[in-house]
Image (cartoon, rainbow, N blue to C red; front, side):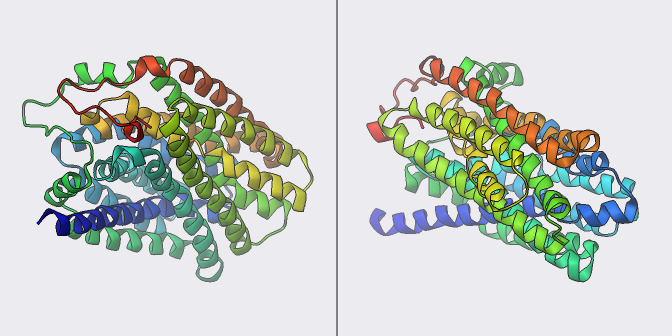
Length: 436
């Protein structure tokens, strides 16, 4: 009886991954579609680059401020309900952006998009990791987080084409309707009961249920999320690399428009290629981390250091060159590495914090990514662009990767001290199940 049930359980786990990944695509399509219409909004409402950057940064700011409390609630009250509600909120807010008549109304719509998206990244990845074996953590983390880059590809590319032919309002309308449709499917297919069966069939790490009145208090929870030098370094390194990645995603359409003379549809498609390269790097970074981590868990920190160093060298060098093929090749190589640390960082956090608070631990990582990267990345780049030009701003921002690389190097030195011990009575980990 057990044999026939396992393939169905594995299949359901991959279905959960596919639907969760689809919602993440919708999340970032709704978030990044704005970048495709930057030139149109700038012309129609006479906005500065600082104002444009704020429309992008406010989403990440709200994600950063709300991800921790909302993820903590999701750990206690049900992750699936939280995911569906989040998708409905950000989709309706995106539809609101479609009917905005001024900068202020657009800012409010983007604010609400951030409120809806706040807990999705951390809770969604916690759901996915809960139904797969521990040895697949970095690969799945990298692949899931890469959904942000792939969603950015679709948002920027499709948004640019729609804006060119139908106007910028339709770009937001299409993204909002897509999100609502996916939320409806997710709510029907994914349930807590089915997730429990999938965990049992996949041999995934068990998670203690949170009974009313017996949940872990915030006072006891916080030390576990910040209990080692390594986990702090993982937060900082990941956040700073995200600063660079999100600045590039936000401003590449405008850069191609201003310095290569591309119209919005072609600039969006070209920028989408760079976002796609970023996503490929995320998946690749997670796969390399898992493979090397099975032999030596410390090597994942080395992978992160190499990616940080490579991104600053390639991107700073690329933006020093004049517009042309050589510049685009170097920028492409740099974008491949700039967020390849995402999967390794998520795996680091998972191995350094208790499984019972997985969503909250990943929410803390999302908080770091948002406050250090997603929110300030586009906004700071916009402020620099107003003062020194967009090309000069993009030559400066890769320097944040120097600090990120140092953080990952320091975290690797203290990694062994921060690992979460195996609970008494639990089966010992095999070589291939060592934390990755």
